[in-house]
Length: 154
Image 1 (cartoon, one colour):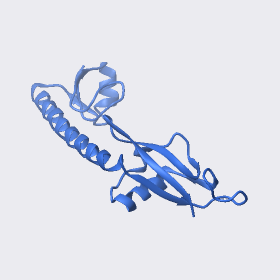
Image 2 (spheres, rainbow, N blue to C red; image 1 turned 180 degrees about the vertical axis):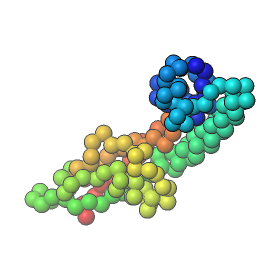
Image 3 (cartoon, rainbow, N blue to C red; image 1 turned 90 degrees about the vertical axis):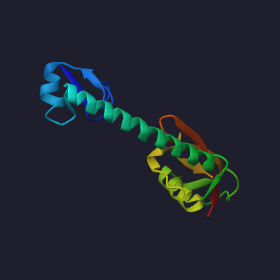
Image 4 (cartoon, one colour; image 1 turned 120 degrees about the horizontal axis):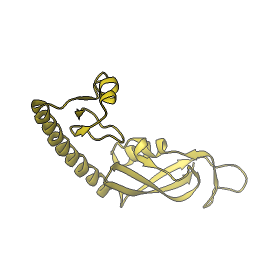
């Protein structure tokens, strides 16, 4: 059965795309949940409009992400955290707990005024020592950039 997808479905297609799926899958899953509609002439025109709107929205999101990247790449984000007792607070001192992507997103917001979702920030592992670290931000599928983080003891 030919259907037009109303939302992105992993391994099936993207919103507005006309796809051929099994009749049972369409009747029992896609159509009752409102994830797709039958592909008729009028519906295909509506699907074309969805694809055009999506491409315009995607281009705007990409340019916004690139502007944020231009601002954040040369900037170093400073975060203060409590260090453990004993060896002092020199370079590489262990922290109580760790610096997470949530704390990093808050620091970016206070220092630059740019609001980034914590889920867009990727740390290979939580930051547990003072010093310089790298995080990666992915604000758009095509826009990924590094964020420099400097952790100091509180």
